[in-house]
Amino acid sequence: MSDQPHSVDPAAQPALRRSLGVLDGIAIAASSTAATTSIGIGLGVTAGVVGLHLPAIMLLAFLPVLGIAGAYSRLNKVEPNAGNGYVWVGRSLTPWLGFMVGWVNIVAVVAFLAYTTAVTGSALLQLAGDAGLHRVGGLALDPGSTAQTTAVGILVLVAVTLTAVTGIRAAARLQAGLLVFEYVVLLGFCGYGIVTGPHDFSLSWFDPFAIPSATALAQGLLLSVFCYWGFESAFSVNEEVRDPRDASRAGITTLCTMLGLFLLGSIAFQRVLSEEELAGHGAEGLAFFGERLASQPWAALPLIALMFSAVASLQAGVIPTARAMFAMSRDRTLGPVWSKVSPRYGTPAAGTVLIGVLAALVAALALIIPRLADMIMATVSAVGIVVALSYALTAVAAAVRFRSLLREDWREGIRAVVFPALSAAALLGLGGYLGWSFYTSADHFEVSADNGWFLLSTPLAMIASGFVAAAWAKWVRRSPYFRTGKGTDADAPRLLATSR
Image (cartoon, rainbow, N blue to C red; front, side, top):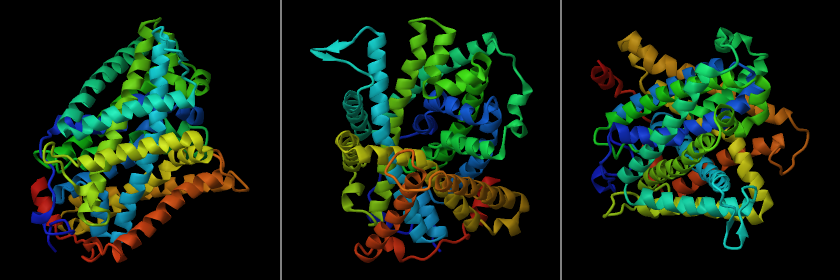
């Protein structure tokens, strides 16, 4: 079977402009992963589950995600495609599962963008209050106002969307600038906290067997895996890097950088804050951490870094989603508007704008439709199931595609087949556990962001809608994506040769 993507004649496909290097890919992937946000919000929440064992859980969660990253990297070597998992799963397993992978990721990211829009607006209004700006005209600024935070967040979303439209290189440079500031603040405060923290360092922090229970271990792993979500954005721009291998380098580098930052942050937090303080401040963990180490105005720096991280993650959400829809439109599984490339900027401009508009519209409608707000929160809460499923299917696709390496070279076979397969099994197990915990946490269905049956119904509805949309693409749009059969492991010998 040909190595060419299985949609249409490559010569007839719209092409994206190749202008990115490794550092640009790292900037995009790191912004999507949003380490500052994960440290500032996620560590406190995770500590409420696993106690003072944050370094252990972050290390343990890294292992299956590393296996997934290896699968992405190998698949990218033989078939760089902006659709990544959508294309790779479609070729190696079945187009139905491939389409579902692409679809649920799009729905999850749009909901996440709508949620992050309000978070970004809240951070900006908090900073304005810290700077002494409490009124604009006759309006009193209130970080607790959903209407105000959403309105400010939508303005930021519009700005970052326009930046993404005018060129992927410009967007990557903006994200790189924001990342530099974030990481300088993180390294400075975390380093200072490790040196001066009042709580003694303990090797038990790195012992996963000291975590209180198996349930706490599983819940902590799910939260930690979610912190690594976004590294694959480097592979969403693999048709815009000058060398496709740069996407793999960017993805793996980003993932390893995230591990280092998460370990640094978790050790620093546990040196400075007690277990009660960590769990008690949860989503405000980074701001509280900064206040314990410095007085104003220096204590505001972590909040500024958190705001920069939210802004960057907004743009980083728009960029890979537009590329995924570009790839799906190119296969005629979605409408033609998503694959239009701007002759001036060389980006899927129309699709990028539509993604931003769609996310802004969902965020705005949530103000007047309370149940929509619950739906957004449920999607964000349950996105772990979708992420686990998407990652696992991509890893299985890699194991199937490169299975001949088990016969050709057992060492490469372990790396290309066994490790991804084990990672997929681990993530499917974690996703299944999360689904079961949702199911057993309630005895009735209620449209509420804390009702387990409602939380479980959200990812199930996303998956079901994906199969409905796939049926439309197959029998109404008559997309060639569904007419080319499965993939093959014929590329494995070429991969083996190029990896030596």
